[in-house]
Length: 225
Image 1 (cartoon, rainbow, N blue to C red):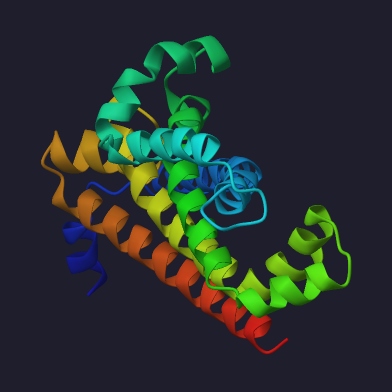
Image 2: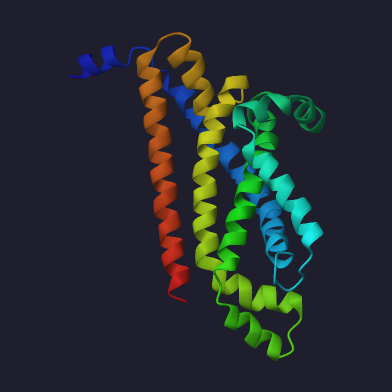
């Protein structure tokens, strides 16, 4: 049995698989962190400046909405290529984990911001009005009313964004971004090593399943509060 498995996985270098997995997790962790830092305030601002909201500003909302829509409409593979000069300027390289994180953040931030805006829009308008009636400032309304009430939706948005980043990180292998995607392209596709392709795909599927399970538990936790 072991001989058959060895024959089926004759091209597998588990050290390379391990390093590629670590690179993928590093890209996911780093890009998700910056996406949350940038996307959450952007989503809140989109909500607040929207029609009939606390800080209604049609011009501001229109500009922000346009930028978000433009970035969301650019295919990620194209974004990777377009951003190479900026990525090199920012990180000194367009390769590896460091070279993949900037386009990952730019690609995921507008996506996450829209999800945050949607989650905030689902908060009962009566909660906002009740908080306003108590004399709360806009900042207090956001922190003490909007965000706690929208937390299940925001947790779901983080989960969806994290899973999207996994697919984006895999695509970054097209330009040598490192990780499992790079391994799948260089060995699985270009060298026709099917066993390498299968292993990398299975590992990515497992990662997505783990992220989804963790996300579902977090959503359930905040929904019960």
